[in-house]
Amino acid sequence: MEEEINYSTLSFKTGGTAPKEEKQDSTIYSEVKPKQAATSVPTDGEAAARSHFCVLAVCLGILCVLLLAAISAIIYISVVINQQKANLSYLTAENQQLITNRSILERETEELRSVTDNLNWTLQVILTFNTFPVNDFCPNKRCQPCQTGWHLFQEKCYLFYNEESPWKTWQDSQTYCINTTADLVVVDSLHEQEFISNHTEFYYDQVHGYWLGLHENKDNWVWVDGRNDTLRYWLKDQIGDRGPCALLIPGRNSTASWDPADCIMQNKFICERDVLIRSN
Image (tube, rainbow, N blue to C red; front, side, top):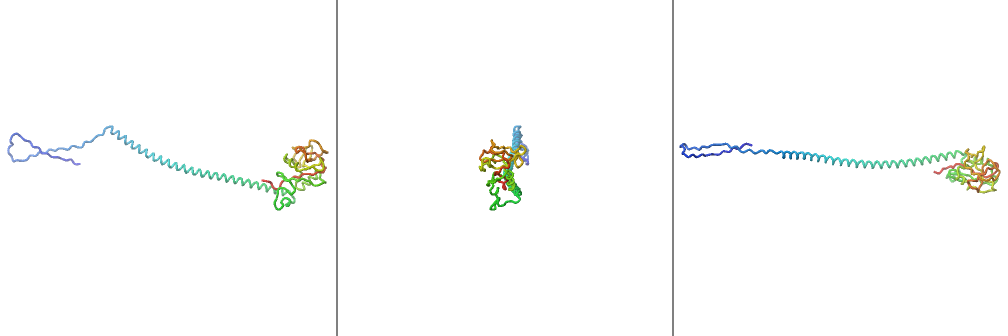
């Protein structure tokens, strides 16, 4: 900005008369400089205030940036958490489905194993026969656990020989059972003892009964499968001639109905064999 110069004219009067001269205007110029604009100098308080304002503005800007960053981070974390929750829910459902499928497979495997075991059992029973009696086991082409005329109990089949006299000795009774691919009955429990007792009946006289697969051997009572007897369901009193073969007397208490009889005595008998088809 250029400085502006002002000019002014000054006239001076004197008491005397000035010599006459050619009248001429006398102009005196003086240069008057304009006032320069005063420069204001800030005080210490104002400088501190401005400094604090600047710091506050910077801090506020930083806080805004941090706030935006925090909001963005929260939104991102929220999205990630929701995605992870969705993934976890999906994986949990998949895991539950796998557990269910595994349970189904284990059950089906167990069922298949059971079927296989039963088929193997049936095959082993069939192989005990020289000639398998198909019609007796499978009348009308439907196989059953026991032959016609035999009684089922648990996984055993029983034949109660109830033919008319003459009956058979202990050894002849065992031979008869063997010829039917069986043995004289072996009693394993009180339940079995009660079963056979309930299927026997009084005949002829009080000393006649049904031969069991139990005989005396060197002062021990032994079953035909080689096991020693542990049940000892003997009569409390002797009713006939004592011998080394066990006879079940019908109509007696189940736990006291065996009689040590003479093996050559002729009696009815009970045969026992495994079932052809086991129940699941």
